[in-house]
Image (tube, rainbow, N blue to C red; front, side, top):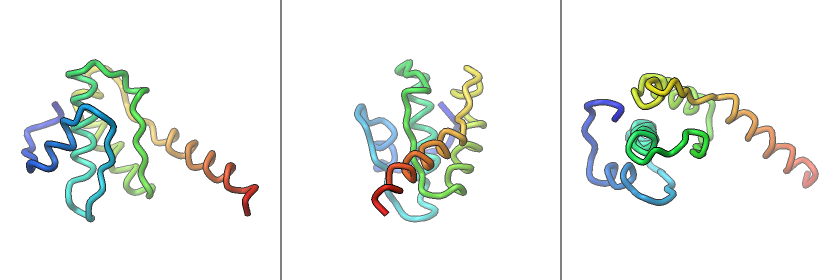
Length: 103
């Protein structure tokens, strides 16, 4: 998978869960590392296409960090599959467009 990092039991549950997941935790708790590892395992072990993974963050900083960690993950680089931040921006624009009529 993406590296030699060890994860706590709760982090492992989030990584290995077979269904959809929401990862919510405090700053500096390892959320990004957990998500990148989860994506890597889904791609490598389950053969899941990267374009079937939806990851949402609430800040550009978090999105950039997720992209950088993904770029370093063998699961993404081996298949030359790079997460693309612009897709997050498109989602953001869609939400704004949907909410505009309500304002």
